[in-house]
Length: 376
Image (tube, rainbow, N blue to C red; front, side, top):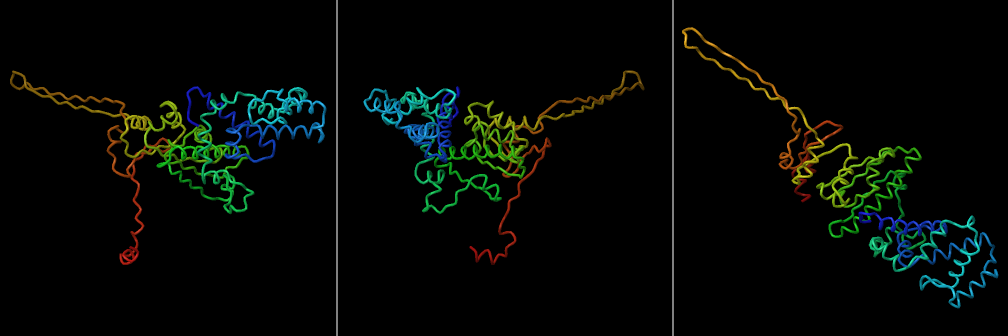
C-alpha cells in the first residue's frame, strides 16, 4: 500500500484484510485476492453469517433455529424491530448476531466472530473511507486475466495451468522470473512485486523457524518500484533464512520517493553489505557512494633547498628542508563517478575497494563467418 505518514490508513487496511482472512480460514475456505475484494467492498455479511451458523451448529446443536429465543429474534428482525447496519443484512443474520450478543457468554465467544461483528456494526460509509487506499489496489490485482492468474481456482477443471507458490518453487529447485512490465503500468507492477516480496518474506521466516538453509538468490531490478517493509526485513534478516539478495537501482531519490524520506532510503540501503557503482549523475547518489567507499590518508611531501654566499670572500651557506603532511580525502572523488565509461564500476566488496569493468559477451565471437552469414 502507499506509504502514509501517520500509518493510520495502512493499519485500517491491514485490519480489514485480517478480519476477512481469519474468517475464511475459520470456515476452512482458502483466501485469495478475489474473495478479499468481494468481502471488503461488498461487506463481511456472508462470512459472518456462515461463521455464526457454524458456531451455533457446534455449540447449540443442529436444532438451534427452533430455539424460542432465536424464533423471537427472527420475528423481530422480519418486522424491522432490529436496526440493520447495512441493506444487505438479512433478517436471519440480524437474528443470529443479536442472539450471539445477548445469549452467548463472554467466555464462550469467538474472537474471530467478534472482529467480524465489529466490522459489521461499523458505519458503512466511514468504513469505505478508511479502506479507500486498499480497494484500488485489490481492484488492480483482480481485474481481467490478472485475477485468474493471482487468484486461481483449484476446482476449475478448464484451467490446466499449474498452481505454484514459493514453497513449490523452492522444493523443485525452479527459477521464478517475474516480468512486471512496469513501463506501461507502474501501479499494477508495483503492487504485484510488493505482494510477491511479502509472500517471500513470510516464506523466509518459515525457513528460519524450520532450520532450512538451502540458498535462495533474490534479484530485484528497479528496486524503487517494489520496495516495501517486507523487502527491508529480507535484506535485514533474510540471510538467516538462506536468502541472499541482489538489488539494482538508479538514484537515491527514487528510493526516497517510494519510502517517504531520504533517511528511510538510507536505512534500507544500510542493510546491503556490498556496493557496485556504475556511472551516476545524481549528486545525492554520488555522495552516498563516496560515503560508502570512505576516506584514505593522502601524504604530501614538500622539499626545499636554498643556498647563497655572504659578502666576505669564501663564505657560503646552504640549507635543505623537508615537510611531510597528511590529510584525509575521499578514496574516490565525486567527479569521477559521473565520468565512468560504459560497464566500468567501483565496488566495495567486504570492505575492500575495487575498480573493474564488466566484459561484453559476444555470442558470435567463436562462430565462423560463413555460419554468421547463414544465420543472418
